[in-house]
Length: 113
Length: 113
Image (tube, rainbow over all chains, first blue to last red; front, side, top):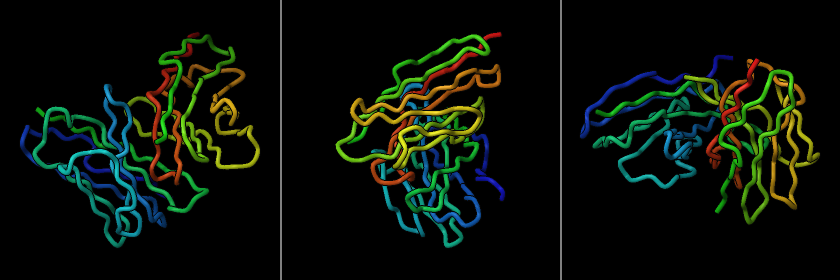
């Protein structure tokens, strides 16, 4: 099976702009979770989507949003970018049922200038 | 609320020596526990998981971990490390499912020749 893919791998944006990141899960996986990784805050949970519905949400401002499509692909959007949004954004997919584990993609490195 | 504390931010060790990476968690309910490894510029890879049952869990690459409910710990061990084990290791806990995990700050394992 192909692994989790994330596009783009690297991105440079300017403060105030918005950005959309994409995640394609492993075939058959119905759940996609997003995490933000920074040197200062570590790995923080953003949200999880399961069968096109947001199932869990972390403590991030409303500028961070996401969605999942019928083919389980997911996108996350960050509006009005701030310098502090610079991070590695990781996507993870899994079957969505207890007993299974997440598989992580390589991440998208977002730099906000 | 759940939380994870990785007690060592950096662990240097010589090749072929044993290693233990320590992880304590806090939760008011039963939890699922995970250890992940992250190599530079890559996503996270699952080493092992504890969901229920035997408290000694064996994972990939010769790693194992022991769940201790009374001490709320889930320490990772390897009897003999290799240079290739140099990486960042993350302990994670989830009260609900793998899709919403809380991660520790990570432990950098450096294996020296």
